[in-house]
Structures are given as C-alpha cells and as structure tokens.
Length: 297
Image (cartoon, rainbow, N blue to C red; front, side, top):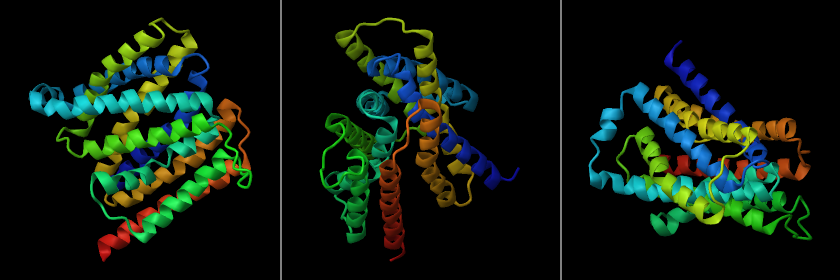
C-alpha cells in the first residue's frame, strides 16, 4: 500500500471513530455522571497513550524531559482534559446529542475569535462572514429552527456546549508553545489533568465503582475519543502527500455522527439540526477558503 493510500486509511479510521463518540457520550451518561465519565475515560486514555509511546519507542524521550518542559503540559492538563471535557460532558447530559455535537464543532470559529486578542491576529471580512454563517447555524440548531421566537431549547446546555469550544480553542492556542512530541504532550496532559479530575470528583460526588455498562462506555470514550484516534489522525497527516486532502475528511464526521445518533441513541434527527449543521460547515469552509486566499496573496 502506497503512503497516500495508507494516509487515507488512517484518516478514514480516525473520522469513523470520532463519528461514534457523540453517541458514546450520550449512552455512557445514562449510567455515569459527567465527572465519573471523565475520570474513568481519562484513566483508560493514559494507559492507551502510554502503550502507544511504548510501541513507538518514545518512552526514553518522555523520561528525558526537563522540569521546565513539563510546565506547559501541566498547565494544559488543567484545560484538557479537566475543564474541556467536564463542560462538554455536562452539555451532552443536558442536550440531545444531535444538538451538542454540531455546537461543539464550532470550535474552529471560536479559535479565530480568540486569536484576535490572544495572538493579535487581524480578522478579515471573509472570516467575519464565516463567523456569522456558523453562528447562524448555532441559532438554528439551538432554537430547533424557530428563529422568530428565539426560544432556546436549553440555554444552559447551549451555553456549556459553546463554552467547551472556548476551552478547546485555548488548549490549541497555548499548545503552540509546547515543544513536546504531540503524543507525549497529550499523554502528559491527561496524566497531569487526572489529579484535578479526581479532586473534583471526590469533592462533589465521591469515588465509587460504576456499573459495567458505564465502565464499558468510559473505556470506549477513553480509547477512541481521547486516545488512539488522535494517533491515527497524526499518522494520516504524516503519511499524506497532500495534507489538505486528508484534513477535508473531517467534514464527513458530523454528518456521519448524526447517522450513529439516530441508530444508536434513538434520537429523531430534526430538519433544523441538519440545516444548522450545513450552515456551520459552510462557515468553516468559508474560513478555510479565506485562509488559503490570504496565503496566496
């Protein structure tokens, strides 16, 4: 198999895995609280990522890191997994999966907005259009298509879903300062984030062993949302001759996710969800197109 076909294989595998996680979140939250799901999923993720480091022969590289190089991964661990997933899972607890998933997908737009004050980047008229179009999609989804009434289905849930995009964007902005290998960095984020998760869980609910379905759900989330899928995606980008071709595969994920939500969770997919998702994807497409135009000019 040539490198481009291998890249396509790994890229599609990553997209398929990510397309199932919204359903996995919703099903797991039937048996676990958001904090419990985060704790047990993070434990699985740490084991999975360390196993990947063993296979890749990077454990020695991990052990050679100096104390000053651990400062950024430690700080990032507070954002991801602790704050990001805690807020995201709470949003999924409050909202139908078909609403939470597309709303979380607007993180790239949030990243653009946060880059203005934090990275002092200038925003173009095209990017402003992308923001307007994407957040129009958010309003369509959140109001179930009833734009005139402007009555949000669950304002708290919508707010948490959008807040999760802020934490995810901050994670990627601050992650640019890290010099760690991506897999090592992610492993350290979860390793350092786990104590925060545990302390929060002990302070709010206490630690107890959940039911078998809950543990199975957490294991699935830890393996495919927080662990091996990230490695698949990195592998795809590394092998691909044309990274843009692989990166565009990610647009398949939210639509495929709706199929799994319908089949596995049993939610009837509303027309407003599909229309809102199309607007969000259109906004992201406008954003990408404008970035390419800026690079050319």
